[in-house]
Image (cartoon, rainbow, N blue to C red; front, side):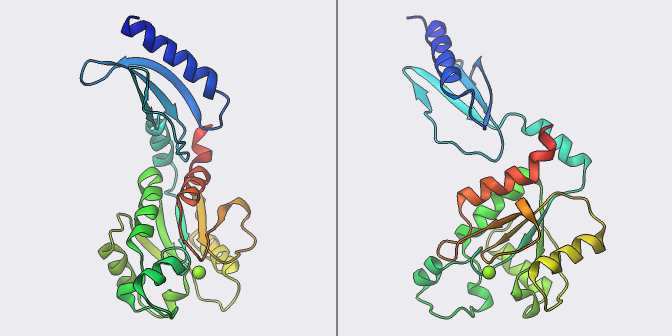
Length: 229
Ligand SMILES: [Mg+2]
């Protein structure tokens, strides 16, 4: 079979198999950088489906199409905000076990699991989101110290502030921050404990593993859903 016919067949197969999925963005044929025909498939940001990279002899490239449009839409609006908890998000029981530490009160230099910071970076890279610290740790260390430590562990984004300390529920501290800054930015709250009053903005991580891929996908989806219209 000619390469072009095979590639067309692969494209049709892929469309038939996936076009009703929520992450679907379309498919087409093109020549890759090496001159070979390839099928490219657009995947909506926020989803990382596990998919084949090759069908028969045809290469299949899965890419975040619409990212350009999405970036443009996001750049017109205010930058999204991530309200960030630390314990149970950027560190976890699995991480503590790896370190051999059995106290929750970590030294600053051990506060962040590099793997979790890399997860957080995915959200920043996809959405341009900035971080506001909602963690208890904002009482113990200055914003500068915490930012410095995050950066040391590989964080690529910016920390723009912390929520006010009210000695109230975290959800209310976050509400107050939003009101006081008069922002209409899209936002997510990453926290292992329940944060009430914020609907789908709240993404709950698990104490065992902290921030994981499905939380990342959910956060990107939440932060970008307005830009897809
Ligand atoms: Mg926590």
